[in-house]
Length: 427
Ligand code: PMP
Image (tube, rainbow, N blue to C red; front, side):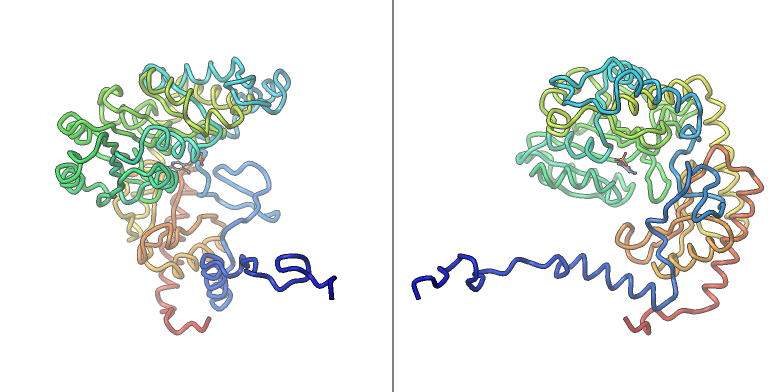
């Protein structure tokens, strides 16, 4: 039959079937986790919709909860001055920047924000981008390449890992906050590479502990590497006036080559930035793909972050109260016999639980007690170190914190007494 389909034409048997997304290992793993949740009667704690702006309290399905899951630590997402700045910027510039800043997306609010960020960190210049994740990724890929070496803390954020993997440099992690381990890698590997970059977080987002900045600066002087510090959780949190790790440790900010921050935490907006020497910022503005080939930060988000930064500078008592409440909560947790791991007691406070199923059950029990706190499960943290992670907020009251500590201890005890044998769960 001359009309018979030719190979590859419509109607012929496929040479190679289109892959099914359901065959992806990550999809299968997600299904296993969901089945485990159903078998144990644990409601999925993720993707709950919050009605309104979550702060010290939040509303889910019409019910009000005490909230420990927002990183708006200084409650500026609620602040009418920050909201008004965003609204005014929309009225003046529209919702979008409508172009990359390189071409026609630059607005005065971008320059204003960057000037304030540089001054806040005590360095020469800054550049803001549309996301914190993207900022890490594109900065690392812009600066580092195949002949270079990246050494990072093993608990570094996924956005740093993504950049370190994408740039093609040799990449090694060192044990969490173990700077002897870092120095061993420096001695063994740095001579074989053109440039070396060491990347840490100022305040670790899962454990709430701090990088030892003074010792890192000493190592930088000795071994000649670029030091990059991700201050996502440290800005507005560490230091007497919230200027981050440099202020907390009393070191010169110029001794850190690359300060990275997000606009999504205490500055109540969205976006990320790099602050440092003018030459660094010029390079990124000219060559970082995630900046050059991406739209400019929406003017309203730049204006909101800019106003939030003004408030942090003008009202340092917000930072003081956040410190006080955080320390108070750690004290209450410890008094209730709970383990807060290595946390330093600034805004990010974990309660160590152990296995992931217990942590998920505990989060469910807390919700029933009127408290919204999320579990952090494997693979976000190593197997066996699942936890509840509490984010402290400027508006939390001492009563609320004391109640949360007592309820956590009670609910955890109930779960431990249940003695769930995870190996016997049929999924
Ligand atoms: N770095 C760290 C340490 C983070 O915790 C996060 C996100 N929470 C990011 C970078 C990414 O920032 P963003 O959410 O603003 O994209």
